[in-house]
Each structure stands twice: as C-alpha cells, then as structure tokens.
Amino acid sequence: MATNPTHSLWNVQFLNQILDSMAEGVFTLDTQGRITSWNKAMERISGYSSSEALGRSCALLGFNKCLGTVCPEDIKSCGILETDQNEPKDCALRHKQGWDIPVIKQARVVHDEQDRVVGIVETVTDITELEKARQKAEEANQLLTRHYRLHNIIGQSRAMQDVFHRVRAAAESRVNVLVQGESGTGKEVIANAIHYNSDQAEQPLIRVNCSALSETLLESELFGHAKGAFTGAIKDRRGRFEEAHGGSIFLDEIGEMSQAIQVKLLRVLQEREVERVGESRPRKVDIRVIAATNHDLEQLVAKGYFRQDLYYRLKVFPITVPALRHRREDIPLLVSHFIHKQAEHTGKPIQGIQHRAMRLLMDYDWPGNGRELENAVQHAFVLCNQDLISSQDLPKEIREGRKQHPAYDPEPSEERGYGTEGTNKPSKEQLWLLLRECGWNKAETARRLGISRTAVWKYMKKWAIPLRDPDRIHG
Image: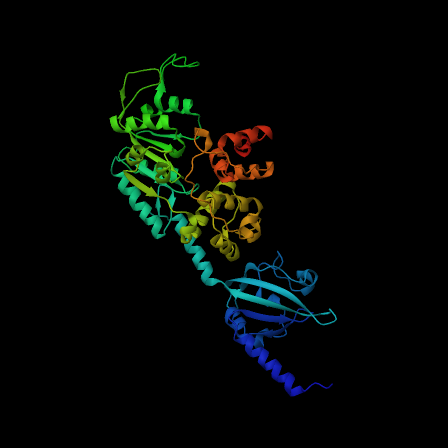
C-alpha cells in the first residue's frame, strides 16, 4: 500500500514539535555518526543551532566521558554500536563559547523491524543547578560553622537545631543529662559535645559501656574495689566515678544496667559519693552524669525493669536525638562530610556523588542511622574508581531501596537476668554482616537479631568469628 507523503510529513512535523517541547536535550545520529536531528533544548544547552549541528559528528560537543573515555571523532571508536546502550552518567559537554556544561548523558542504539541498526538517539540533561547545589554542599562541609556543627554534630534541619540548642544549654550547667535515640544516631557525640563545650572541658570525660561487662565486673569498673575484695583483686583500684572527679562520666546503654547496680548508681546521684567494692568508706565525687540509651526508659520503668527514682534523677535534662529518616534534609550535608573525611583518609580523589546515587540515599530509611550512612560511604570508596560516587558503588540494600524501620527497643537484653531469649537464629553470614554493620558492637547486634548478647558471643565462638573487628586489628 502506498504511503501518503502528506501524512508522513505531518508525522515528522508532529514528532519534531514534541522533541522541541522537551526540557531535555535530544539529538539523533545516523550509523556514520552524523547528527540527523537536534531539538530546541540542545540549542539552548550547547549554544549550537540546529543548522550548525546537522550533518556534523557528535564530537562537536566534546563530551569528556563517552563510555569511559574522551569523546572520539569516529562513531565506531566510542563503542556505542557494540554496547547498544550505556547507563546514564554524569559528564560535561563543551559549549560553543568554550565553557563546560555539566550534564547527565545517555545513548541508545535504534533498530528497525529486521533488527538492523538505523541510528542512535542521545539525551542530555543540563544539571548546572545541581552542580551548584553540590558545590554549596562541599563549601558547607569545609566551612561548617557553629550554626551547623557543634563538636562533630552535623545538621541543619530544625530537629538538629533543637538538639544544638539543648546541648549548649546543658553545657552551661552541671545537670545530669539523659540522651535517648536509636542506635547509630550519635549519642556519644552528643555527650562529647556537652562536656567539651562546658567549663569542665579540661577535666576528664570518662566513658563506660554498661552492656559490655557482666554485673560483677561493671560494679568494680564503676565503683572500684579494695585489695582482697574478690579473687584477683591484688591491689586497691579506683573506679570510673572517681576517675571522672571534676568532670563528666558517660554511661552508655544505661538500660542494660542491673537492678543492683541501679541502686548503687542512685546513691551516687543522691549523695555524690561512692564506696569501693569491699570497703565501707564513702568517697566524695564531683561529677556530671550523662547517660544514654536506645531503650524507652519510661516503658522499662512501667514494666519494673528500671527504677523510677533513678529514671527521674537521670532525666533532669533529656535530649532526644532524631533518627536520620526524620531529618532527611541533613543527608547531603552528612554525605559531603563523610566523603571529605574518607578522601583524606584513603587519598582517593573522590569529590562528590552522582545525582542518582544521592537520590537513593535520600529515599532509603536508614535503620542504622548516621553510622550506617558513614558505612555506606566507606563501602562506596572501596568500589568507586572515578571522581563521583555512582549508584553502583552503594551497598546492595540501598540500591534495592529496602524499607525497614528499627523498632525503638523498650526491652533490655537477657544478659542482666531480665527478659527472654529470642527465637531468631542467625546464619554465620548474617551474623558477620550485622557485626560489621554495627561496628562489632555485640549488644547492638543482639538487639537487631532479637536475641541476647550472650547468644551472640556463643555463636561467635561456635563459628570462630573474631571477637574484635578484624579490619581494625590488621588495619
């Protein structure tokens, strides 16, 4: 059947109108690499009119990355005919007037009904504004002022500004502080900020992880012991409260503390004195207590796991650190900071992150919060071999966009003698991955698995998993 030439002409004109209405630059090439169409957006982005571009090679645009290389003159040299299509990539084209335009570029080979190559279509997206935003983020990383950063706490969101305000207020007093928030939100960083922005900054800040030791060892660690108080006590020893005299003591994972230790801690807060294990002589201490937990202490009090009087003594001035998914506007700032930090540490010349990769980071729910985000950047630095991190450099769970919210854990572990053993038996691989994600923190690993910390230790022993992070041991 004969083709109506008028109808064909109308189709071509209609197609050209569609292409010209697009914000993205679109141009086509024949099999010899000559430009056969050039829409209005390409004229705006490149500075070349349609009449100047038609019939010429796409080398006219001087793309700095075509399938990993500088744009060649010959269509066969660039490899698009063999690869059929390439992934969208950040690159730059050379404007007619001589300056570089940052763009996202993608090319695809077009086939006819007999699968013969009839041409190539390329799309170009001007990301000049995005590059300006990236530059601002980098400048923010280098020039973080007190408004956005307080002793390594980073954030410009309203939620974090409230945290900054409360940290400054706490630092100006000597009240006890209770820092609450999910694992990985930076509770220890908050404690550091409070202490080092206070008048006691030159005095000691002593840190104790209340979940890392058994009840007996924790008691000795906190309060000290007299010579002969128990087997192995061969000399008198000061406890951590005494070491913190004049400064601050940070009690991490306070929700894991046993009832017996809670009673002794309450006396320290009330009387400002300690008694070493095996002694009856009280010793005065001048300390500020900063406690932290990822448990809901109010629920623990309601269930009888945590003393109410101790709870009120600790929460004189509470600070709640928001989860990362509740302050997503801080993610670009944090990413820029972590990239700068890793670039200095590794010496890799990585300058930033591609738009698609940043979009994945913004959409992910971050059950591990800031710690998981930093781990993701570290993961990307291992794989990335260009100046910008791509989506393929990110961990699998982020690329797949898995949605998972960690439960705000109100229950303490079985380790202190209250609570029940979970039923989730991990595989060796799962345990390895979780330990790595949690920075080899056994208590946090146990919480995510829903089992006790003792069970984690047993599995590690069973499968000969190192008790400390092997990367840090050998690194």
